[in-house]
Length: 441
Image 1 (cartoon, rainbow, N blue to C red):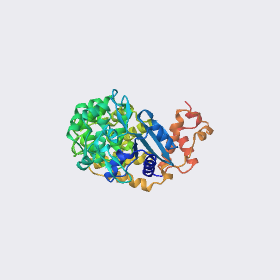
Image 2: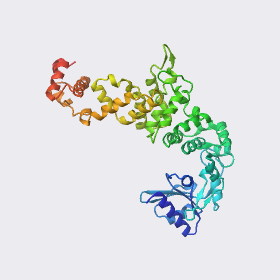
Image 3: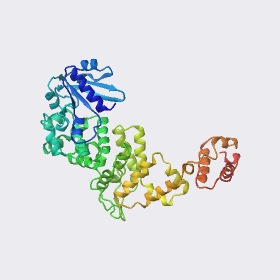
Image 4: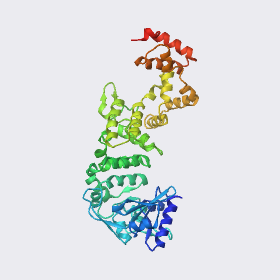
């Protein structure tokens, strides 16, 4: 069962039991825009305990806020009781909520007008208490009521305004943007995990370039990612970067992202984050050590925003390797094959392609790597080892640091096609490292 079908069945059952019920929020907005909703939510005057009575496969996921999760097969829908909110003393959650019977009360406590629409799935009638349909037509992100009050209530709404504008291709209407620019500093009070999730959505949902332009325009960029804000105005050598400064180059990469993973998108954002602190002018503009500095800065950013260890490792690898493509034409065969079998290499290759298209536009190196990948099969990239540590022990070598060097030398020669058999590998070890007694420290 799909989430939409489940949501419609929930509305029907609630109504059959004598309650009001509507589709609400983002799913209504997306349906009216002709977009595929990611999930569906239902709002009702039924209290949480009553919802649980009516739906056997349900659980309270926000009892204080009247939210019940209803499941059927693999689908799930959040069912929320109409409510109004008291003050927000912590800038995140209301201090108290009051369950309501009037859907208007529920709509007017929400963040933006386009997210406050309710839809009757039987008649397709839209309940619009905040002017959301007009704002959909105007393609505007507008806070409900006083925008400063909405942002003071929940500081995450500051960055959510940017995300919705970027994803939908909308403008943030002037009063809402002015409030955002006055209050952007409140974002530092939001937990890193919540900020990270919004940034990830800006980077991956479409409109990443527009999202980061709005983060900059609003002042949020300097609060959240000062290392990225530092890219603005940092010149690059025009013979390699005719597009302009580091910030412009990065925006061009973000613009070219198409359904990226979080790691690829973050790699695109941060691949040159080491350039501002390493900028110098010698015979030309240079960024000596910017890759290493970029990895260091990215580690701090990703740790600060609580990215997972696996994501952090991949993003740092993307930054560390993004300049290696310049040398693929001169790499030894063994070095090239090891590079091509880098974990998640497709992301490295795509970052390189975007990097080229956002600067010189030349894809010679990219095409060379693609051609090598096409001609090399898995057996050539990852051949079965000719020697193992056990073989070295049987030769009389004692386990230790020299083991790694011996096995690496054998693998290099194997990858380069200089060895074909175990006997060849043993001969190479004897030739380069001597017999067991000579090789011992």
